[in-house]
Amino acid sequence: MSRLITRTNPDDLHPTPGYHHVTVVEAGRTAYLAGQCPLDRTGAVVAPGELEPQVDQIVANALVVLEVVGAVPEDVVRSVIYVVSSRNDELGSVWQWFNASELAPAFTTASTLLGVAQLGYAGQRVELDLTAALPS
Image 1 (cartoon, one colour):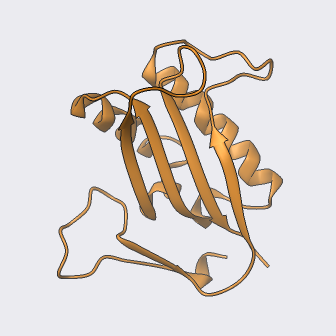
Image 2 (cartoon, helix red, strand yellow; image 1 turned 180 degrees about the horizontal axis):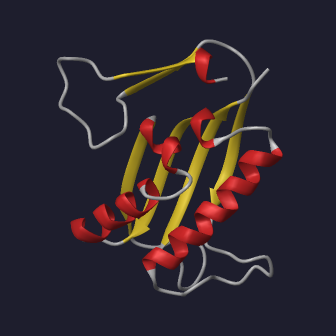
Image 3 (cartoon, rainbow, N blue to C red; image 1 turned 60 degrees about the vertical axis):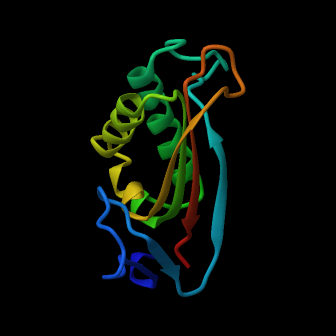
């Protein structure tokens, strides 16, 4: 699918730390994946209150849902990362941890990183929304 996805950064905008300002998908099927939470197979929050283990669980979960729809991280065309924090260092740490993971190619596309007050589960610090352009 990657040949139908174009990522670009306009010359008149600021440089980015790895993502692209614009992602264009020529045509085809799209998967809108539910927010991936740091939940294990039993539905329990992994490492309540801790960032890195929660990112690791989210990466594992996201790779499963991408595989189910026949996609890989390179097929992701939009990501939104939510972090329960108002600290720039924690937001940056989560961004870097995701970009050091097997899911890293997903974050070269149009991406947003947000600090939020609360997420849906007690102890949850991170959530990830992905949109993927699916292979034909």
